[in-house]
Image (cartoon, rainbow, N blue to C red; front, side, top):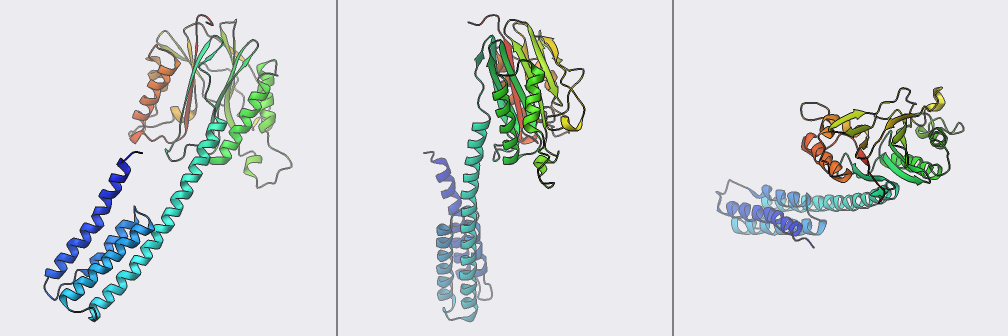
Length: 364
């Protein structure tokens, strides 16, 4: 067990006791017309901000005892001024003790919700295998807030008899609803990646899985056209030096080759998943050269929309071009650190995910 939190709490606890001691001593020595007793209410109030109800109640009791000692030293316990000070201190101590109890209960609920969120995220967003056929892979997921490690960014990979299929996407929204939508897309991808012969068929299956239910209530945002998922779906054959891509409104991948970063932009991108029913669009597949030593970098808009203190977006293309040449994991480690240093205080405005895929020379 790490002793540092305990030492920090003990250090904080010394503050209200030092305050009680200082106020008591000065109040006893002060002239008769000076009354510092009301300052004692600060002790239990400060304690309630970081300690539980028992500690807060104990500090409040010590403050009441100190006020009683001041009353005895200066006049008597039955002195009207000190009597009202003691009563007020008792009532305030009880009140802040109740607040400490409410805060402690809320903190326990937050910890439970955070645990559920993390468990849900780990189930939905499973780590990618480091090696799939002739490919090496790495992934990274960054939550917008450290306390909220859950969101709608998604990625997955599946092996087929002829190659590897991948998806990266971003569900509109946050929280458990977004995770539910992400789980739906990922489940559909894992089920269809092995069954659909071509990439358009796979994307059509994904669209069918997330399409709005015409019989859903009008107030259901998830089924009224307000929910959608941008996605890039890739097929990388084992025996062909190419990558096939269908883009559904997602930021274009980057191809890293020879110190350059080239955007893999498709001529006819499809609308995001969940919106195709409202737009007459097919699924055009575009192919790009993907040779040994090349790296394809997939990412969500949380990466390229991260701003620095001056409001400038993160220059992913330029930063990725000067990538380390030690593989996908090293690349993402570098980009992750660079992205967090770009964002003020290391806090992103949106969840961010990246997947790096490198084709190696052989399958050994």
